[in-house]
Image 1 (cartoon, rainbow, N blue to C red):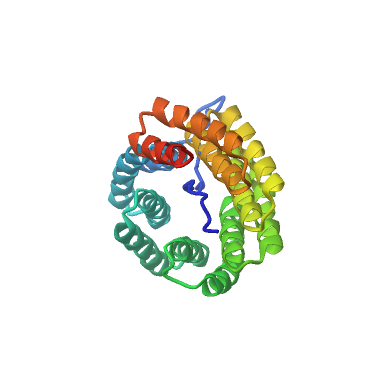
Image 2: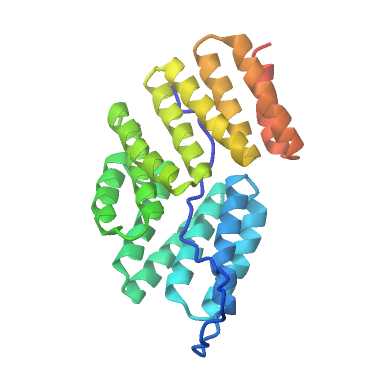
Length: 288
């Protein structure tokens, strides 16, 4: 059966936070206003994207990318460009997304940062996998190779495990796929990035569903829903309820499926997301 799990994920990025000091540090003569705004803004944009607010995230990242270019900060340009590519991909603007990822690869090559270069290639590989522009085996080999260079950022390491898990799932290696996603989950729980941990459980649910493990899939979705409630992630909640409806319907549990669809619909409606509401309505009508 075709994988019906549709939740979109935009990976987290390193963010530099500015903390107050008891006494003012010596002024080194540097000015970092635009850099600070962009660094802090990436997290805000990723949070909006994780909640399904892609237009807001796109607007934010477009401005932050301009700031990173104004200060000629290659590391910042790469990270903002990767985030922008993810948001565009989630919006269905595939060609623009790949253009951003290609730009990030070129900038990392020019910058000479092997870790960011590998990260950019992994982001593009994920896009190739989901859009079927590349075979799952080729993506798995590339990500496994490139992940060896990702040593200094645990969230990027987690992302590489996610992509490997997705590729393994596409190859039908479900046990290995779940093990890879659990490597990502361990990092996200340790880093307290619960929106990412929720997505890990969502992905595990997808893998279990494909493997025919209905009870395990529902259990994983319930865990994902519990995390999304804690962080008030409406997009994640609605997506998980929709997926639970799909899993229950696949198992012949029509009443449970309808209840899950209705919960998903109510959340999407409260978000004023008419497109998702229409999709849920089609699922509900198909049972009549």
